[in-house]
Length: 471
Image (cartoon, rainbow, N blue to C red; front, side, top):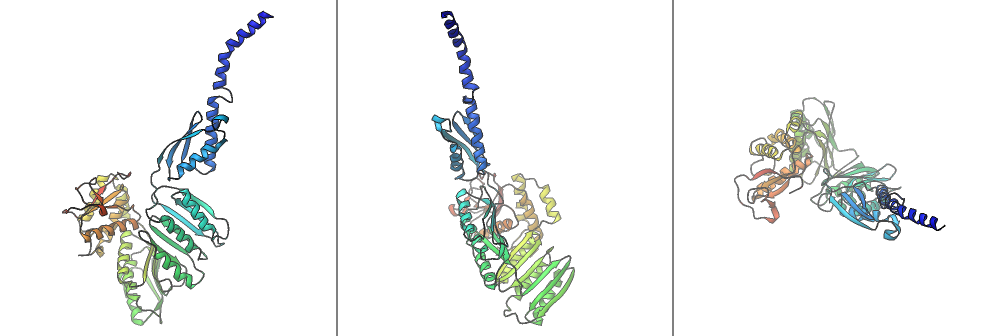
């Protein structure tokens, strides 16, 4: 009996290291199994919450959070979810005890696009990029207050929202959509556009005025369904002029302007009749000079909506010069350009062949600026009418460039011209260049205009490359 006790004790002593090893490494409560279980639950909880940017690795009961965070509030939200993913057990009951965040900021998204849609049934659908969970919640609440059903949320967190009151502009878009029967708003960068169907003339007048009046640096444009006073439409190689002309003389002037630039068939369906207002004809004539270069589209005057609307497709240079011509003579009427910029074949070839290296972009853009291809009217910040082709090449080359800076000296006219170039590139779908004053002569020495005492230079406008990180 005593011998058996000794034997059992000896076996126990021999087995003890194995039991300890198994308990630590192989049992369901082992450290390795515990880490794997906590990691799996943490990842599952993150995915259920729609957080796909974060990853988790366990070091014992410490969760190491990694990934590229799309916003400042994304990290504490993910950390909170991971901390609760295995209950509140902590150290005592085998849950996650603490979080170590080793995340980095996500790269800015470009173009940064957010959309809101009101369906024919009155329901709202929100989609696109949103800068934070907090803003997402606010926009959902704003839409829920006016939606005739549950709001569909297809928004995704993303870094890169434009500076300024982005949230306020998005909320304004939801409020204006609520006044329509149906429609869609899009906030792309700094540009807010809205299309839809208004319930009456009062809304058709008020909504475009509100959208057009958004605070800088944002800009707005709206097109609502309705019968315009006058329009010119291009389709299938033909142009149709329709609507009312105040007098026979103005009808002939509009028809002559169309014939001067359009090579296809022109059908005159205009009727001479009282239009209540007559100060729009000169603007329509100036617009036709460039609208005839559109591939397809419509140029319309609608006094109820507050002015002119241009839709369709044309090259960036054509759209820019049409905008210049019409706004110069529009007076109190608005000119809303909602045309799609399309590159001509030769410009598209230039973009494909372009070397995206900063030095190659600098050389090409600066060569166009220094020559006559892209030039301004004397003493003005308006592009010359002959610059349409050069502007197309300019946009095509800039499309393939890395982030660029446009250096400019202290002269007021040159600063206005630099702003005109930046506005044009942004409107053409190119990332807006950063405007910087010429300081010590290098990109590193350049500072934002408002914070530096510029120095004179023989070259008032000059592009220079900048790393995508902004450094």
